[in-house]
Length: 598
Image 1 (cartoon, one colour):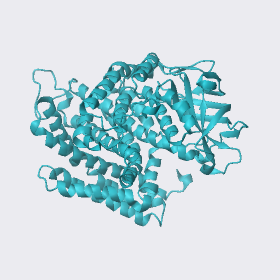
Image 2: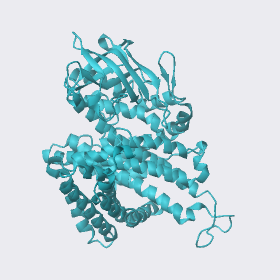
Image 3: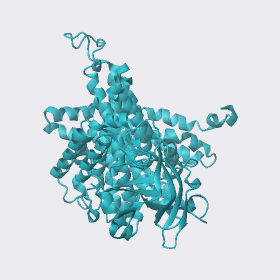
Image 4: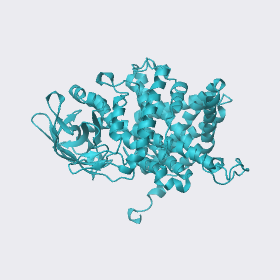
């Protein structure tokens, strides 16, 4: 069975040495955040994940969830107790406002803890993540009464949350939503319709479930302009907040899925269920996008999380599995064969996983800091720049990190050979669990189109121009440093490729919209390669600064940063040239065949 050790040291290196969290003391939640508090918080989270939640990962995969005749659902053995420990520890509300019972720690710390949880047990973590997303939506769009009613119980984990978007005929195109809402004399609504793919839709771990549901009020405008968001309780609340009778919402069935079996993904039936509007009539999509953007970044964290745990197990196995001899002569002559870690192709695979994993973590931590700045800075210009960063990086993190997470899970499985295909070793579960992340919250092709079609042209291209300027300025100084120049020079070429691709799309897109459509996926990967490269430059810089004072394991970790960064620049970053060539080839061959020729 796989094991997991939370990467506490890696996370501390990023927040303390790469991004210098102490510089953000002017932001809410940062002033009292000493290094000791951060380290103690991450250590406690690691203990919960390693000792309580990770051992349930295979249990959840094997048992799945069970739906009973009364439409109730039982979660896998151990989930309920683990959820109790998680909520009693305050982890559900780690970054939630203190006024509603949260710990009010910065979002960047919450994101790190969420990575640990998702690595330990993705299916279990999703019950938490969906609730946090619903909390975010209600904080931004809920009325004062709704916040007072729902947030304390949800942050405490007494109640959990979901998002109900997809319908059998309607996925990404939410303008096709058919679920209807009929207004009542008391201001409530009656919600009727069927939603599918609702993660955490029914379970036995919390007293109540708060569903956020997209529906169309009778007479509303067609398309997305006529969508409203409603809160629908599993149990109706009585005066004073006590739980009353069951609402007319139920789990019609549990979806039979490729992976994440421990999470109850439901078909949800709303049969004239009582609901209350959030954010005003016909403003539902704006409210739901608050939750979706939270979830898109969260799903990017899922990609990182699976990559991390898969890497840990593949690396450990490669040092134990004996097979063949080193190409340069036996390295362990006292054994019948060398461990496979001596083989260059095995190292290529492991370093590929490691380079993408550590690059993803750095980009997610950096973006988490930008989230905190966007929420808490009192400088409008600084907030604007942070919001620009979030707009630009959200599709990159969701798309590139989840593509990488799945690829890395497959590479890690490959390290086991035939044993990787056997369920008891756990690697095939990582592959199955990782696959959904490329689909969730808008498939990655949609993320690519969002990046190309909306984000790089946002506000006259301000976000992407700001990013280019920041990277250019950094590299201009880094190439002057003898120790950094070998990392910075390849990055300068990669950045030029990204800038060329951006210019090509801007020039050709207006004349033929299929050109950016055909190149969007390659552009997203090109952007991800450059963003990760920038992160590697900054990690190498920080590692070099710390090395003179380091010894033992710490020195080994820092040296590994320099080597892995070099591997990224030499073996992975050159892919930018290929991505640029694909983009510049246009859409002619892609669109040439008539539909009936496929």
